Image 1: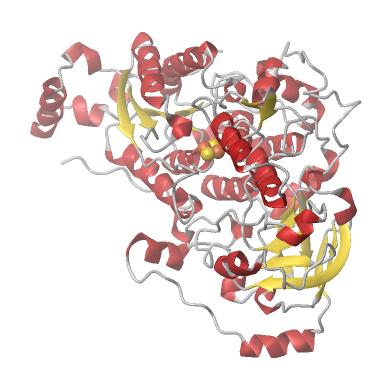
Image 2: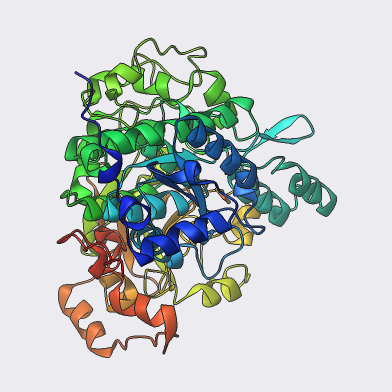
Length: 577
Ligand code: FES
């Protein structure tokens, strides 16, 4: 049965353009002022193209051109496209952390859609936080919306060897510090690691979150895997522009797609990709906007039954997103994962997830593994609990040296990032390969903005001995391109007095991933005594966005959204006077 179709006078934009009053006269005359003819917009769905292009965002450098390609599709389908720029969260440049601003972009997206005559939205993002932010905002506004992912950049190249975003930065930085490569070689790596526009091409946060968007049904099938410079990417952008017009007429909204089952699909895909730990925070925040109950525990339940099928770095041993695309892309992975998925979930193209993956084939079974030969049979991510993290912590076991997944060692504590930077390479630091490195004051409030400091550097003197992984614990996040036995997102964070704040040098800490345990071997009485001595560090913000952030940010296990942005009664549309 064909979906019901709206009438032009039922469009939201009709209230701005279609009525007979002085205000509508103003809206029409000012649209005509821009050179549009009456027939360009009269009775047509207005499509906002929320574009996170910026001169400072290399991952979105192609978005000016892509926005034009989206517009072409909107025009073809009988819509009226209007590009609306929104803040670009450029991971390499924005400080102290793009995470501080994820909720700002989400608010901007929501309010752009609410305050203007918009019927549907094309969301253009890809660099880490832009994907969750755009989706969170669109979810709260709940107008028809389709996601256009930026696409991964081409693989890096150095002396004929592929280089992976982030992962090889950490790797060769460690080699430089260990003295195994020289400054000239380091500069060559710098010149070869990012060769085109597009987001990071490892299975970092960007690739994970765009795959999440597709798994949630928010992109056209196959969209998330297309490399940014590929001509197929431009065609996908235009096709998305065409499709959003149909979605408006059908009134197909995010709330029709983002059900509990769709979130389960997204979590399953994160595990099968051995995706970024950041995705856990973002998915909980997105579910919070959708009114879907989602706890850390659900990630662990699904991790235990989901095989890792994507052999992509950093969890995989050699492949990158370009290889993943040529091997069949996300559709092929979804097809291999079919029995773990709710295939009846609806998607933006009006078909179910199951219909969208029909006929998908894998062209390289070393890159996208069949179920019979997974990268690992379970455990892309694991959720830990214990007296050090009563509200949970996470680890990516597949990216850690296996010997460290069950480990007890003495803590070496850094009270904040500067303390760590000042002492980590000091020859006098009392540390060996069995030590557990602990970083405090790196959480949502302590960072602030929960920066990606969770992959603490290995002390130089241990690097020289050949040590490349150690247990590291913090309330920070970690780049999805990072690797190592890093326990992250410890909640509650140290800044609010979580047990992490009470750890002292020499305390024995036990990590047992199989038992999902993270414990500090200190008596409750001693921890209470230390709590009595503990003083909360100051927050740097007395005013502005930072002060708003400090007042309303939630902890990692609640998704780090602002408390006042969670799902609630619908915000009314503005009155048009
Ligand atoms: Fe933009 Fe990695 S820096 S996705």
